[in-house]
Length: 535
Image 1 (tube, rainbow, N blue to C red):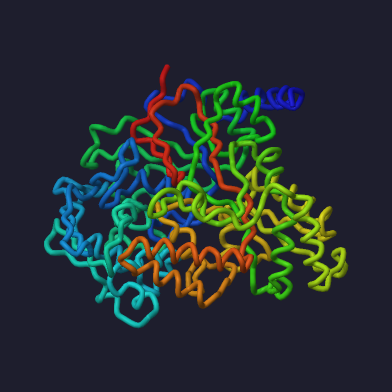
Image 2 (image 1 turned 90 degrees about the vertical axis):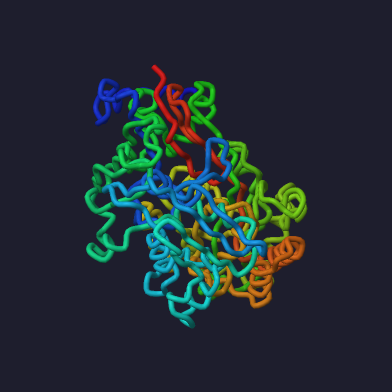
């Protein structure tokens, strides 16, 4: 380990001298340089499904609500709201000084347009199911009703009303979530899908506005002087680098020209922890492999279970990821509320993680029962992953485990981020890595994406009883009934071996010791509104 780190430092010193577009002299104390991921597939708030891309979006746009420094829900574009006695109608009072980055007023009609666009089948929004809590949304998404029947309306320019199907405890959290952020009808009508491609058309209502859009290089946001709370925003400029280069990230943090980075060399993580530049964030997220159940060989539940049992989850978290993760034997992670206490603690694990030798023995028996004794004649499986270093390291370990335990060959198919997402959308995989963060604190957030008709059910899982339980949990007013039903739904899902859970995620980040004021949250949506560089 020490030798590897010494060699890497030599490499980093070369990068420091030759590769930086942001030298120490160029960094203003009010500019934060951030490296999260490569070029995103889209930065349209409604159409984006990627968690890291949401970080760009939440700095350029603002929802009705938002989170404060303690991750509590407070007013965003809305300064206040009322709820009727039945708990299903919310009336939001917008700030009269809330403006778009071009100076136009933010109005209730902006939210009406955006939320109708989100559920319009013509939009192709993969997160449209989040809106199904709103009256008529599900029927609109299914093509049974007109978008004009959605339960939203502008009472006047600054009063926006939403009617839900039933009281929904997490609705205000959803209102703070980027897919619910407003977009401008006139801009989209004029520029169509290209509205996100240039600073002059990427008009937001958030604390920052886009000033540069350099594809495969960076997205630059500068303070929005029209933002209602502009005086309390600390950075003048956020530069988001678009690269998946772990060594360059580390060189940048060591050289003080990158302040915050997600990709970095994981082989050096213990040494970097000692240097005080690794920050590990507990997040409510699950890391797993999806099965493509359109593939004939994976339609056999015995094979799916055998593949899952062949993975040594404990080894992965202790020897590969090494960031305080927990081995996962179920879907819903720790940190998600039950009616009382923690959903995962109450539900227990569906797959044991403490006796790998016994698991391998069972996996081999299952594979034999499925007609593939010792892996004979089993087809090569394609494992779709992104080019993130930790995805590669885990895939390498899993590839070896499948070979050693079952004599099954896996071909690792790596794609840059946008291409990885598109291949998953197109169901061009046998197995595919997936990392799902909690968008709000409710177990249904992890389960409803596997409903038969869910837009992002990319593996085509389908179980009628599971669907019925999710429908009950989506509409029932009793939280006790909801939680009981969600446990039943997860039991069905895990007994079907619909995925391969690997671990409950913790986010390891590279953070300059000079960077202060970053707001961390369990969704992995990090905020830089109060960040600054300490000299």
